[in-house]
Length: 145
Image (cartoon, rainbow, N blue to C red; front, side, top):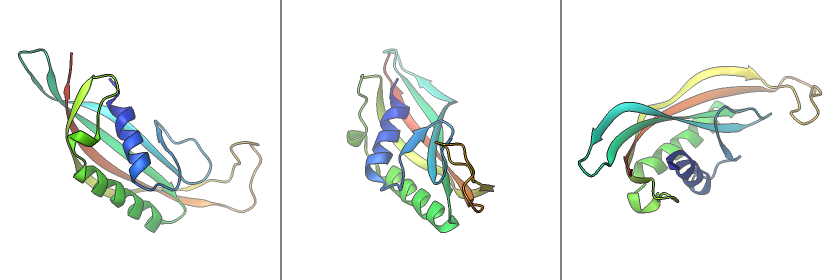
């Protein structure tokens, strides 16, 4: 199933992010946006073998300013609240998108010091403090069997 990949690509292409959205944990120096999807235990089985499922996904923003983090996450929330099934299509026929809704607005997670250059591993002069914010959504989709 390619639901997580399709949603990540849609957000990347339409939310005007300062950096590429990565699936999984952020592991880069500087500003980063990471996306993680989990299956919830909300589902309905249909007689034809398909299943309506609800998935939870979180987007984590690590930015030098809280305003940049919250503004970007709010822009993603607005984008996902307006997305239609015709805009999110499975590339392998594994799902049909139904809807998305924000479950938790952007919230502060932590301040982190990011002072290692990811390429060289050498310290960068000065402390680079970033704030980490998170937003949570639920996505409903019909899973084709």
